[in-house]
Image 1 (cartoon, rainbow, N blue to C red):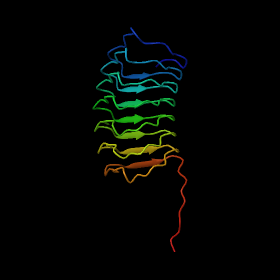
Image 2: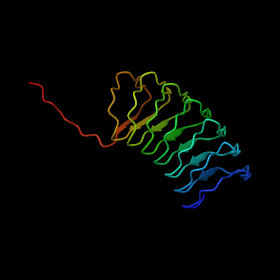
Image 3: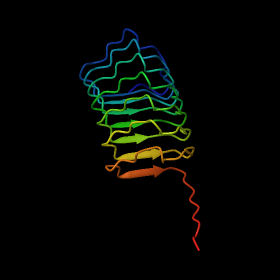
Image 4: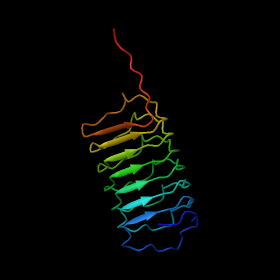
Length: 167
């Protein structure tokens, strides 16, 4: 875990091959294209200020959990997600289309933050997805999305329900 204020390039830094969890502090906002992430890394967590593209980053094949902080808002179209990824969570600002993103079939949990308000039309949600969470800003039709039979939790944070009684 890097400290709260750490915001330095990791170029030339050799991370230990047996590292399982890597967490960046609040202020880290540096490109990772020059960093070789350890192949055994299972959890990668970014702090709130991280807002760098991951298109040139090789995510480790054993990565199971990827969590972004509040400011991340980059396209994921060119990101190759590892086949073992189980959980993908976005912070407040993420509001990018996932239509051209290939989510791994292993994904079980997908969490969007407050600002996400993109149509899921054309998005291929993995059949094994069990938890799908939308933030309070989501206001798109789900008719275009195929809600999967394995889905156990569909959460709309900040949902205000209006019920109209039929005569």
